[in-house]
Length: 231
Image (cartoon, rainbow, N blue to C red):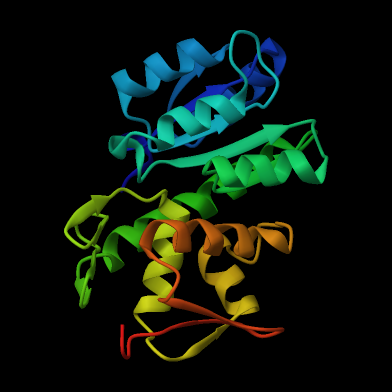
């Protein structure tokens, strides 16, 4: 996908930051839309269907975590990339962002060129995902449709956040094989994204809540294994 066809929404209540980010993204020929509050950002997202959203945490009217949760609850935003850019550096804020469906979390301040580099990296990962997810996996009562980006459990369709779907796909496409935590982290979040140790565990717990407890087995101190036998 050419840069001129890629839409990026920048959401921050600090005008100087929005201006700097927008300028540098436009220099790369991206289409850039901006907002200074959460409610307006959601409206723009529905209108423009951006490929990537750069989102601050602390904003008037609605914070970034709430915005992320609202967007991820709608299947039309399953494939968009959401990157947080915030001065909040606490672990619990990072974790809340990832639980809400964030793809990356970057602390302010960050040099514009580095931010653009991260954007390019995330967009490459999205393009790769779009190329890979073209198959359907069936494990008795569990159907994973990578073309529609949906999961069915006992006939009921479930829309998973993108990271949860990618994690389930990675495990289920390697049935009965232990996938190490390091590989999961690199494949799903990338080696240029720093996330807490609990991030994988949180996503696994949410997957079990949605698809059932018997599919994913924890291999203590090593990683996880998708069980396809006797399910």
